[in-house]
Image (cartoon, rainbow, N blue to C red; front, side, top):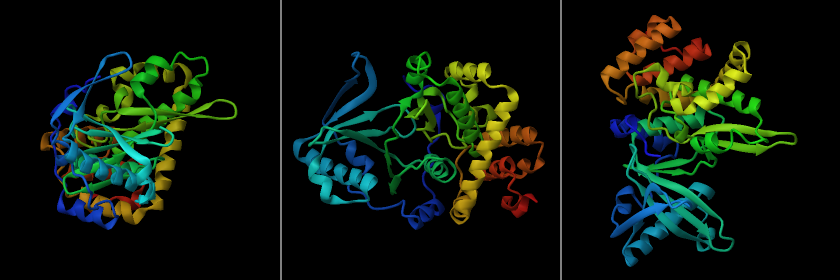
Length: 351
């Protein structure tokens, strides 16, 4: 499914000196053997088709034999870095099966398919342009969500591990009617996911921008909804953009929630999720404080969007302090503090 309108038009923001210093301090910025620009040097490409012979909108890249050999060796090293901390002992077991390129989206990613030649097990990772919005989104995901996520930056290149799960649009089309679906657990998780996105202002969670993990339990399946696209971290000016419930292609799940969960129980799940986020916030206060320092002085959206969002949030929270925010970073961290009741985390300028 092609990504529509907003993602194609999103402005690209380079990594600032403050963010780069933060990434270096926490070992997120390292020297990579292959950069994004290297993967653009292909000699040909062809459309990647799915098992129904439909165009996936990805292009499989073809490289010169000698150039490709060096590139593939470097990609294997990046995969080992992401998955096993750089243990090169497993390199001989791996080969690069495919490099796919996606022309839509803000970061125009490359998806690398890695295969273990001894058991044919495959995995993926991504190489993208290092957009500051996405990097902030990845860091907030690591710090405030229940999910671990691994990524590294080298100047203008970003590498990310693959997030496993059923794409949300596929899940809605193929799993909602299954007999083994635990509807109540799925509804509860979607409500909590909706809350996680709003608290930290992660936008554009249409069904194709998240995945659903299913974990068998001794009685029924458990579900975890995970964002996979972080380009729209505190970028847009509409409050509804940060609430997955308002996207049309999420409507089947929203209807499921409305049918099964009453308003009081929904508010209970929201409070539970805010409590969990608050606990995570308290686990890494120094790191979050450093991220806030560089994010609050960074430019990661337009003035028009900033003014629109802070106005909506001021009215929602009935809190005029949002009108004092000068950047999207300030809006984000004030929204986190107000949503979680973190009075001590509100900057002095807002007191």
